[in-house]
Amino acid sequence: MMGLQFFIWGAWLPLIYSYLPSLKFTPAEQAWILSTFPLAAIVGMFFSNQYADRHFAAEKFLAFSHLAGGVAIFLLAFTQSFWLFFGLMLLHCLLYVPTISIVNSVAFAHLKDPEKEFGWVRMGGSPGWILAGWLFTFILVDWDKVHAACPRGLVDWLGAVLGSGLTGSALAQGTRWTFIAAGAASLVLAAYSLTLPHTPPRKIGRGAERFAWLEAVRLLKHPFILVLWLVAFVDAFVLYSYFNWTGTFLGTDRAAGGVGIPGNWIMPVMGLGQLSEMLTMFILGATLKRLGWRLTMVIGILGHAARFSVYAFFPNPAAIIAVQLLHGICYAFFFGAVYIFVDSYFPKDVRASAQGLFNMMILGFGALAANSVCPYLMQTVFTQDGVTNFHSLFLVPLAAATLAALVLALFFRPAAIPESPGH
Image: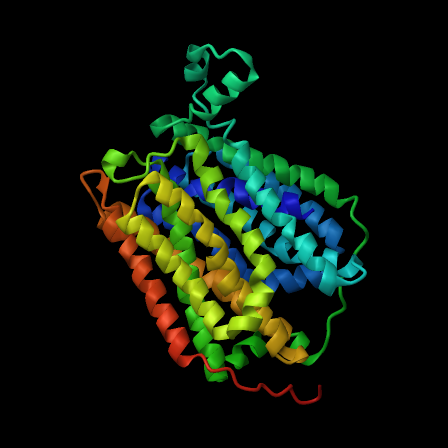
């Protein structure tokens, strides 16, 4: 379940940022399309997540969402009209985003010891994301070049395939297959969802349970929560700047300031980040105990600064590939630590609200800001005569990450939070 859930997302996300310009969409149109996912995350905070969780059996909601959402994203492979593309992507995201929490609900409802077992179940999502990337080493291939090489034997054939990635307009055309793969996986998960154990809808609670988002907003009266929330916004912006620009940067020829990685290797190279994320999560608990909340989170944010420093100042292929491994520190040491902090530090009666508050910022507003600004910055501000000044472009998230780390180090001072009256 988790593997398929995150295969869907991992199949289309890394390359869509470089695919949309090939359809001749303007930066503003690209921003609208890229904003569908964070908009769905914000809607989910106020409506869809709670509504789905309380009115539908989880396995049936998963089946319907992945069926309809899978058809929508499958059709994107054959869509070049902006409004149709935008509508289909919005439909997919509105249906997909709630399923991220619904699969968690299914797992929590049926595991014998969720606290011990859920981490292993959720970890299944990372191999799904990684597998999506490696699949395209055999799809985004220049087969004419492979045939011309006349490989003999399996080893020679594999070498020819892996060394014959698509480039340029051919890569843009081949990227359509990412939507086909995502749609196919979604349809498979729709069918598989019907085999999951029955998970009935939760009953609607009273008071704060009914209006959880209001309770979440009230938490911002605590200064340290407001600081962490705002820093999460900046760090989410930096994270989605990475997703916006890395695929294009990796695929651009070195003569034009890029890295020059073949098209079929872009997703596997970016997938190294998810691999390191899995490994980093193993040491996150020990790191938190040794370094504490603030220092661990600061290191996570500075991981972004280090990665964009290499992008800006040392853009050789070996260094760029190696620095992808920092993604584990970037994600686990900040975002993973934030979620653990909320679950460990906050009183039980406000934990769900606080998780929703930070999810809204990380998956919603931070991503929305990046997806709205990044296409304009890359294609208009930092591109002249068709050549992008990647060095100057990457200084933007480098400065943002450095500032966020400094603010967190100086002003994040957790204080006790009393439980709500009546709990």
